[in-house]
Amino acid sequence: MHVEYRERRNGTCYYSLSYTDQVTGQRKRISQARTKMLFGGPLTTRREAERAAKTLMPEYESRQQRIQKVTAGQRRSERRQQLLQVYTERQRKVAPNSYQVSVHNLKCYVFVYFFEKRGVQDLSKWANHFEGFRNWLENEATSVRNAKRPLAYRTMNHCVAALNTFLRHAYRRREIRELHLCERFPEHQCGRRGADDVITLPEMEAIVAEFDRAGWRQEATFFKLLYFTGLRFNEALGLSVEDLHEGELDGTLLGDKLATHGLRCYGYLVLRSQPDHATRGLRRKGGEIRRKPLKGQRVMDDKAARVVPITDADLWQRLIHLYNQQVEAYQHQVWGANLDQYALLGDIERNLAGRRLLQVYARLHLKPRSWHCCRHSCATNVLGATGDLMLARMWLGHKSTKVIERYVHVHEQMVRALKKSVTHAGELHKIEAHPQPVSSASSSSGPL
Image (tube, rainbow, N blue to C red; front, top):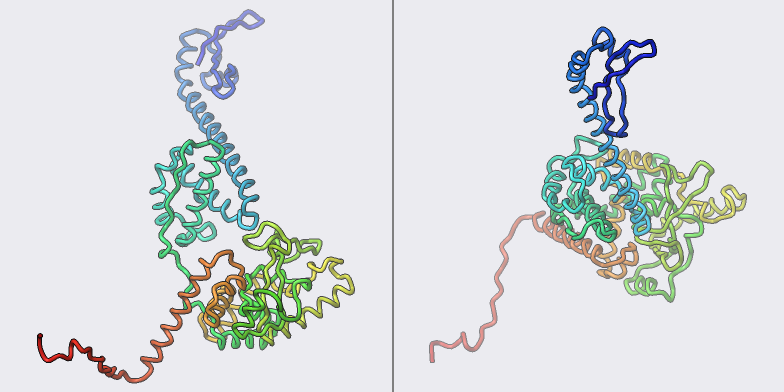
């Protein structure tokens, strides 16, 4: 706070108070109106002015500190937005189908902990807080949608993966000199689907029949389609008339494997893309279905396509009925000239379909399961019927057999559970010991 001696045009004198703005560096003067309001009139002596400056100094210093904190916070926020934008652009190129999840975990969990909870702005010092980050995820962090729900271990590993990917990007951009990665949570803590999540054939038939009885025929076909093909929800939702083909897969590796295991192919699907949802509905406002590559693929072409056989006769008839309906719509050019705009199951709405599935399970008094359990069941059934890892990998569209091997353990778990139930269904009985063959050495009467 500065004290200045000033003169008016009429010859009278007074003392003025001024201070330096720490943000702009400019000198700012306290108005005479504020001085009169605070001290009852103008400051006519230096002693009065110095006393007033000493009185106002704490107020203006605290104001400057608040301004500096706000400015520093804005700078940190701009820095964070810049890092997030660079990361988003990078991930959009590397993983165009799944980058949103990684960006969400980075923004809502990684940045929240390191920038807000710990206040660590230097990325090179983040490695010192890895253990604290893991503890925070496990004990304090909650779901963004439901603040009362703790995070699942699989979600925690997704957050750790987002952190490690972000640090790899920072290392490539030379923002950090050394690369240290955070350790993931053990895989056995991550809940995986097991034998209890496999939908049996009688259960599937009962669900489909209940859907038909309720008049929800599209949902019935959709459930059966997911069960026998193992398609993901979004993949099945985007099936169009150009994806369905009749006939068998003669002369192909997939067709040869189906014939080897005695599986009849009524028709097949050729998937090249899946819907790209900007909103909840399948179509945008103009009626267009925008598409993106399949999961794990970067382009939409024949090389990245996946062939899925149709091995159930009733499912094939249902798909033919939907196909013929869309052919009629195409002849009238309802959705234009592109075949991929004529979706076979375009009336399915995700939230409504989920509610109807829960209603069907409640009517049948069965344990409710999700739509994704159909894919889990298909993989388990294919492996159980054929034991062919390559066939299951081609059928489900996985790039490696590592994921498929999980379903081998699920099938073995089902077999063990079935044998155990059969064993304990009746009375227990003793197992007779079979006589062991006696060797010549053991049959001798005594030592030589």
